[in-house]
Amino acid sequence: MTTKKIPNRICVGCRESKEKKALIRIVKTENDQVVLDFTGKMNGRGAYICKNVECLNKAVRSKGLERSLKMPVPDAVYEDLKKELASLNEQ
Image 1 (cartoon, one colour):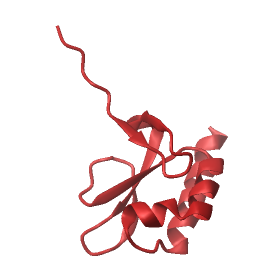
Image 2 (image 1 turned 135 degrees about the vertical axis):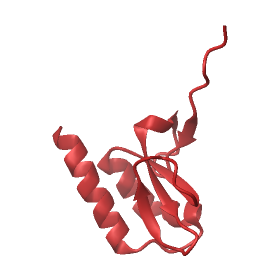
Image 3 (image 1 turned 30 degrees about the vertical axis):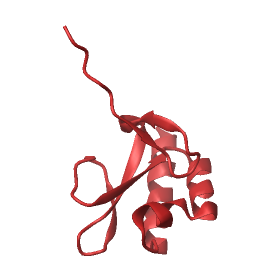
Image 4 (image 1 turned 135 degrees about the horizontal axis):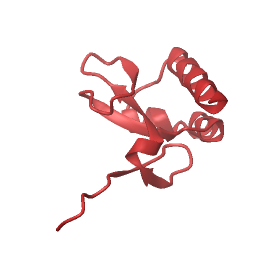
């Protein structure tokens, strides 16, 4: 009997490899919009970030998200990420 392989992805903030489920996916869609992908299945170029504020701050400073998505990321996306991380940390 084979065990199912758990997919790992690298966080753009801390650069650590973690389980895909433990990360938030940010997607650049075909029409160059940047959105948060909670399903993990949207079409487009994806980047992953840990579910903590420190990693988001590192990604902002190092421009890791812009590099991964190969385009500038609007401030609204960072604000949405901060709100999402705050609501996750409250639970």
